[in-house]
Length: 236
Image (cartoon, rainbow, N blue to C red; front, side, top):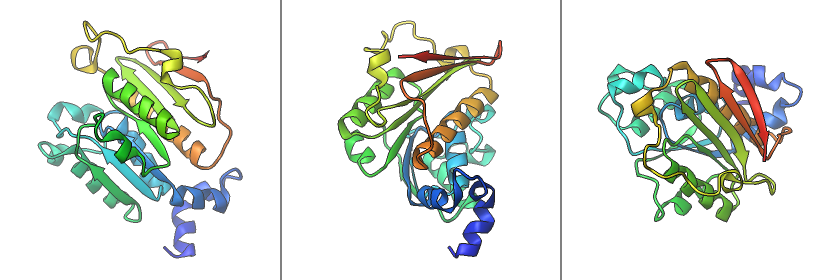
């Protein structure tokens, strides 16, 4: 892309003193993997592609279903029945064709996770179950990859940055995953459609701060309660 085109597309980011041209170059040279192209992954993918992340990986083994559309805003009615990765790729290419999209239509498991994440600078966890979250966390610790974490349920969400410049990780605050029995989830208790947009946008913002070396508060878990509109930070 020509310099004038770069400036025209990203001028509102470049105008920010803390970003500038140097920061935009970092964004365009970055490689980010988003695990999950659902409620949280959708706004993350949207805003990272819009920001001009150079290489955007997306891993998800599910297909788009009609009930996804209240919150998974990169998909649409024409996406129902096709893979979320394919739908995400179409969205990204329509939004910003300069972004290199790498799709993984595979379930993240012990056998493939290290190979997948090894090619990326930052991992964003938009998964929806504890087993995958801990698997992602442990692989990022082993391979020394910073991890942007988020979770949602009902009106509530959480965000954090793990494993960045020696900071703590998921197991430092929750050493073991909870039992599978009676675990709440979005399938049984639901989620208000705008909530993942809020939490996912925060995750995208944290990712861009990581890329551009902006100050980050580590060893913190932010709790978001959109029913009572409160935000709480827990040090760990």
